[in-house]
Every structure is written in structure tokens, then in C-alpha cells.
Amino acid sequence: MALTFETVIGLEVHVQLSTNSKLFCPCPTDYVGQEPNSFVCPVCLGLPGSLPSLNARAVQLGVKIALALGCSVPRVSRFDRKHYFYPDLPKAFQVSQFGLPLAEKGAMPIFLGGLKKTVGVTRLHLEEDAGKLLHGTPDGRLSGASITRVDYNRAGIPLAEIVSEPDMSTPMEAREYVLSLRRLVRYLGASDGDMESGSLRVDVNVSQKCSDGRVGGRVEVKNVNSVRAMERALEYEISRQREVLLSGGQVYRETRHWDDSNGSTRGTRGKEEAQDYRYFPEPDLPPLVIDDSFIRAVEKDLPELPWEKRERFQVEWGLSSEDASTLSERLDLAEFLEETVAHGAGRGSAANWVKTEVLRILNETGIETDALPFTPRSLGALLAKVDEGSLSNTAARGVLEVMGREGLGLEEAMRKAGIVPGGVKGDLLTEAVREVLQGHPEETALVLSGSDSSGKKRKYLQGLVMREIKGQALVGDVSAAIDRELDLMKGFRE
Ligand code: ADP
Ligand code: MG
Ligand code: ZN
Image 1 (cartoon, rainbow, N blue to C red):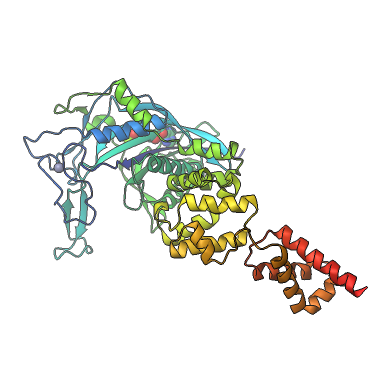
Image 2: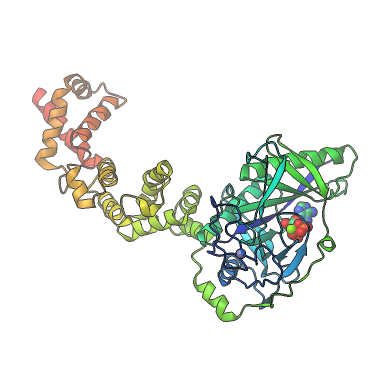
């Protein structure tokens, strides 16, 4: 019988917490683009005699993520020294949390094709980042790898490590998990979640279960620097491990390195076991005690979570699963949408406009919603007019364009766009219809003779009228006015 396989995936995600200073010293964290080793002090350089002191803001942000993930936060957690020798680690140990992490036992919902799945979160702990090695030539060119420099600006930056349960079984699920976690930390203002700049880093664990009962060892893949790279690395590893098992071999537990240009992984070293790190409690830091009032204060600061918002958009607002997902992706966009509704727009039309017009501008310009040239207030008022039927979609789009281009409020923009208060109706509308019909005698004759069976000509004439009045009437009203004129003309001919 042919063998079948099951894939088991668990992820360890490091997120850089958005603090102003490092985890154990006052050095600033906005080191990008700065002179190497300019944001350092005796503490983050690990000089003898220096003493760490814990950054409260980092604890706050760590607890915030933990609570959002439904983790329990024990009253006491502890920092430990994790020893390994590597030149980016000046102390030759990293201060992390091992035995008593900040938080444990949470879960995160992910959505695949509208279906919800829950991925368990084993633990969340705080730790300090290491420095960065720069390989290059003596004259400073970063190629030719003849010397290595070290920059400690990043050493001591606070990280939260979030360890998932091995609950995922496809690269797609892993992708959704990472995207959901990134969305969450951004919602919480806990991290910028940017994978390119290294604010969010993923270690991938993957193994195979074979239908004949054999179980492959867990392989941890390092150096995946984008969501795409993670998916490719997983696909590669899954087929590599299956081939090994199919040929009767064994998959050993090891750490492998993803090579993005080759599209393959290679073995690096056997996996360190906990005892290799010689963990022991950090003697320079007291146990971290988190009391109820601290938890309550962080809880009060929690926004509606992305998956809650998504569900509300779907269930209460009646949006499609796809729209609910698009509109809850970014907190600033979701808030813009909700404020637009608060200022008079209907939920449906606000959702439509935000996901098309507003999102298009944001994508084209790369700005945040607070830099948009119009406010939710003016968009809300504009859409209220569309909803009540006093302004057509076409006219509204014209007004929005003027608001955007010239930064005008609704009233002024409407004037500038040539919008007649109350829209074009009555004699003005009749006049516009007449003008168009008289200007297009052939099409009009066709419609009158009843040979416009597809209705194409009639639609064409209607479009011309709309254009003539700059869209300032409802389609139904224009259509009725055309009917009236055609009837008149028929009567005239008979
Ligand atoms: P380590 O320090 O060895 O990396 P952690 O406990 O920090 O160990 O992380 C272990 C990770 O491996 C978790 O994300 C977990 O879900 C995942 N994992 C555990 N068992 C398996 C398995 N059989 N296959 C794939 N991933 C696994
Ligand atoms: Mg780990
Ligand atoms: Zn420092």
C-alpha cells in the first residue's frame, strides 16, 4: 500500500517590541541608519560591574500581546541566562525567560477561505536581542568576506518570543498564522511587525508522520526572512523529508538554514538541547512580579482585536467574509471606516467606498489614513447624500476627487464640482434629456421604433444624459425623464 504523510508545523516568532529604550538599559532603540556601536552603554555591551534594570514598557507590551492571545500571565516570572558563544552576544549569554515565562497557554484564531481554525500558543516570553555581524573587506566594502565587524546597536533591544503549538499542517496555515500575528501586534501598537527590517522573525519547525507509524525528527529552519520564504522553505522541507522517509531513511532532528537564492535548506549543526545552554536564573534581576492591577490596566488598554472586528463586520454589518477581512486588515483603515459610518454613511456604502476609493489612494500613495486629504466626517456626509438618493455615485466620486485634490470640505468641494444643491431635476433634467435625444437622432429613432431590443442604444443615451448633468441625478429619475420624452415624441409622430 502506498505510504501517506501528515505534516506537523510549529512556529517560533520573535517580535521586536516598540519601546523607546532597550530591555535593560536606557539606550535608544531607533538605531536604524545610525553609526555602528553608537547606541551602546556598559549594560548592553556586557561590561563587568554593570547592572541591568528592566524596562516596564516592554513588560506592558509583552503582557498586552499575551492577554490578546488569551494567555494566562502568572504572578511571578523570571529571567534566565542562556549561554552560547557567538561574537554578536557580548556577554556570551542572552538574558531570556526559560523556566517561568511571562505568559503561557493561549490561542490564536486563523482564517482559511472563511473557515476558522485555532492555533495554540504554548508560551510568550521576553528576551534581549543580539548584535549584528557585518561581514566585509577591510576597506569597508561589504563583500569579499575577509573580515567581520560587529555592531552592538541592536544588542539589548526587547523581543517577545511567541511559541506556537505544533498545530499547523500546511504552509498555507503557517502563512495565515504569521500574517494574523503580524496584524495583531500592529493592532496593539506592540511592534511594527515588519519582516523585511527584522522586527518580526520566524523560526519554522516541521516534521512528518508516516502512515506506517514512523515519525520523522523535527527540523528547525532558520533564516526565513519573508512570508514567501517561509512558505517556500516549508514546501522544500516537506518534500525533502518525505523523500528521505520513502527511501527508507531517517529524518534526524536538526537545525537547517534556508538559502533563498537556491531555494533549498542545508544542515548547519545538530540542535542544541536545553542543557547545552546551561540555563540558570539571572542573578542581577529580581523575579518579575505582575500584580492584578497591572494586568487590569493593560486589559483596559486592549483594542477590539482584529479577529473580533472581522467577525463583527461579517455578522453585524453583513459584509462578505472577503470584505470583512480586507477592511479589518489595518486598524487605521477599519477605524476610518467606522468613523465614516458614525458621520452618517450607511455601513454598506461606507464599506464599498473605503475598500475601493480609499484603499486605492492609500495603496497608490503609501500614506496612513490620517494623512488622507479628506476626513471620515466629510466622506460620511458625502455618502449620506448618496444613501438618501440626493447624489449619484458618479457625482459623489467627482466630489471626492475634488476633496482629495484640493483638500476642500464637502460643501466647498460640491460647489467646485458644479453640483447643484438637491441635484438636477424637473425642467433642468428634461432639458438635458431633450438635448441628448435631439443631438442623437439615429439612436433615438432606433429606440422609438422598438428595434433596440438589447437596450444598448437606450443605455448609451442614458449615459450621455448622466454625463451632461455630471451625474447629479439618480439613475431611476433619469430613466423616467427619458421615458417621458420618448412618449412625447411617440405621440407627436402618431
Ligand atoms: P526549541 O528551543 O528547541 O526551539 P521551543 O519549545 O522553543 O524549542 O519550540 C519548539 C517549537 O517546535 C514549537 O513551535 C513547537 O510547536 C514546535 N514543534 C514541537 N514538536 C514538533 C513536531 N513534532 N513537528 C514540528 N514542530 C514541532
Ligand atoms: Mg526556541
Ligand atoms: Zn545600553
